[in-house]
Image (cartoon, rainbow, N blue to C red):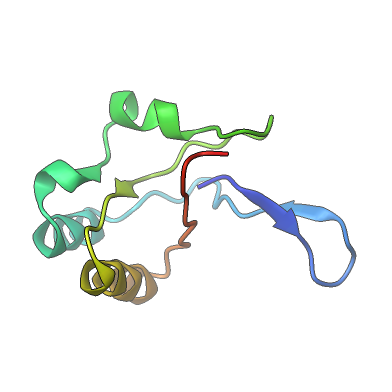
Length: 94
């Protein structure tokens, strides 16, 4: 999950990607149960289009989810928190 944002202290950008850490299979399985398997992307070929947006920064996510409502968003955030995973919201990719 490779977005850049401003550091609150220095004003310098920092990378939110967690290098070398992969999503635990149990977390991925929980996400698939919370949504449905077709709304949880985790294969490299599915994720490649999500590694960039309207900027030049790149970073491939470990998983991409498509929650359909607020309840599903909350479930995804709870799962991410339980496993210590970062969450990077994305809209239209700009």
